[in-house]
Length: 71
Image (tube, rainbow, N blue to C red; front, top):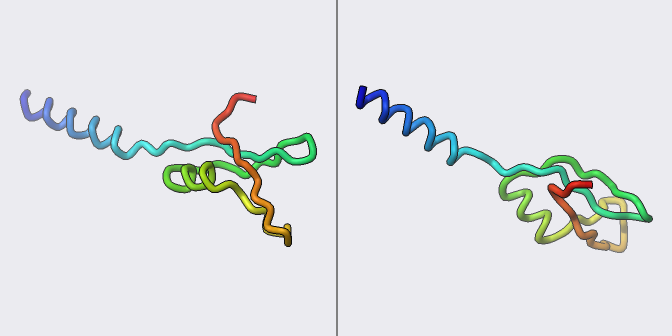
């Protein structure tokens, strides 16, 4: 019984460690929202911190990204 408890604890701990925080992200543009899709983990942190540059925008304007908000 003790081995079963240890196994359950190990599986539970692994499940919590492997959880990846993911959110849908967007930026505001011309009064609307442009959806960027779902970002997780390090990518989520990076896009929230650094913003998003529109690939076709030759000016390199950085847009502020919002993730995981209720609309």
